[in-house]
Length: 124
Image 1 (spheres, rainbow, N blue to C red):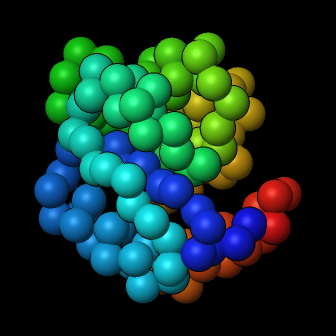
Image 2: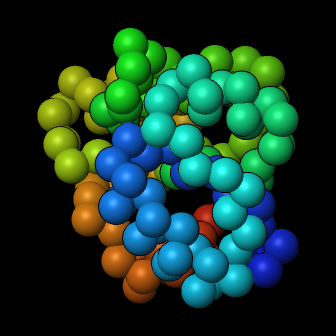
């Protein structure tokens, strides 16, 4: 996947983590279309901004978790999802993997990990 052409949306309820991820992605040349903190906003903004890639936290700030939000987004349009979580509970990972995401990564993310993940994607 070409980094300079990549439109990315971030769904992360921790402001500092969202800011750090935005800085990393910008450093890689990606265009961050928006960063939202909850599932409802994620669904609305994905429809509006049509990102190529969504970094989706599993646990979010409202009643809709990242897996549910991703499923709703994928019903409307095909896009690449990278699930992120500080927790690696087996049942959560299995539920997320049913949506065929590009990846499921454990936090914290590093610049190196992000670059390798994006460059090794099937679209790359």
